Length: 191
Image (cartoon, rainbow, N blue to C red; front, side):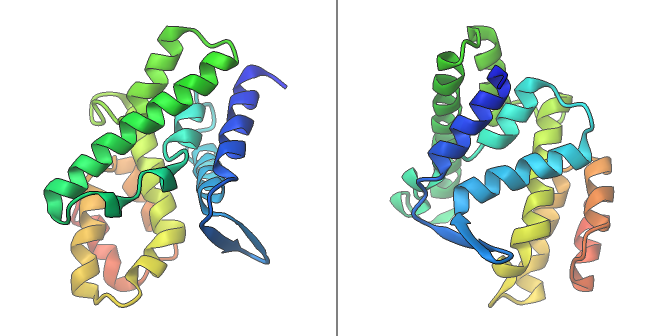
């Protein structure tokens, strides 16, 4: 096993401790582990030749997310943004520790951390790819459960905000997903 694959396996092993479970087909699996694997799957479909740094960042962007629950932060936008910033820093540090244990140098660990923290999304092609992949994973597997109990009017701005963070290529990929017809304009109008 090469060191990239060893890092991916270590991320999966860490995420396998997620007490939250999700059903995927006929098997129940730790939610964080499944999310990371879905991220890698979508990356492989979206970018046929991603760098090792991008592959690691995509798999580890939410490593051990259950350890930093949203409920620990105040309600509202300010609390949400603080939670996201703190979580990104935590994820970047956690992945860097795993990478260091597998022999990666400080520069590569820092690069992965920059990607996980989504620094310069619109000007860094790899950061933009990570953002596109995360949005595609959300739209492919999580938007319908998220939509449960919400009206189209409530969901539309959420999907539109997500689509605005995406590249034109990412939005085009989103339009190929099986989404509710009412949400398609949220993507097409985001560009």
